[in-house]
Amino acid sequence: MAPKRGGLRAEYTFKASSSQSQEELCENVVRHTFYHGFCIVKPDVKDSLLRQAVADVKRHQGRFRPTPEMVLDGLLGEEGSGRTAALRKDDPDHQALIELDGLLSNFAHGFAGRRSAVELGIDAGERTHGLLHEACLLQEDPPAMTEAQAAEWLSTFMQHRLMLILFLGPARGVLELQPFNEDGNPIRLGTEPGMLAVVRPDVL
Image 1: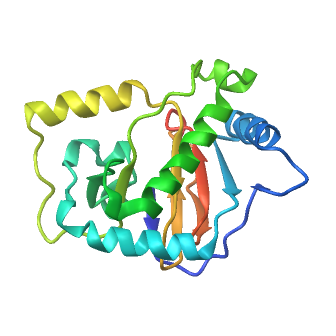
Image 2: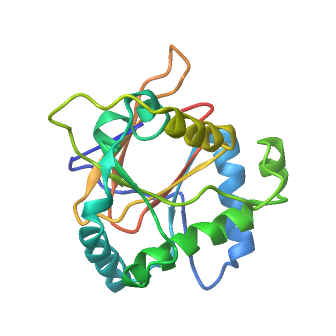
């Protein structure tokens, strides 16, 4: 999986609306993801919150580190996850990021107990800690992993049932999903700030 810059228009499978409850939206999203491998959602997120989140990320720059090469393909690829940073929920300077991370937790809790979620091996609303990804190409080769990093990533990938990818922007781009099936063609999706992609990492 790799996001790239591009001009594809963002298209949504489902959009949050006042006529549909969060429970109904989660049921539809997880069912669609189960059968199709991914689902594109437009959650109810204000543009002002997204702009504040981007400003939070800029203040977060000193915490970004090159992503170890061994885990790139399990995330968003060399271009999509060139640098990553753990999201700290106890940081008062990043309230917008914390609020958006809470949005992802709400979806995770909403998926729990749904029939399609249970068939995917999701029997609780638990999720790993939020991770910020910077789409960039490193000038140097990605670093090797330390033993401590390997243990941390192993714990993450052992719980890897669904990926919830919220695009902050500020630019639009393209998310490329590559099916593991050798005969499958890449799926290219336009992205924009506020778009949520729910992806099955066992098939894409």
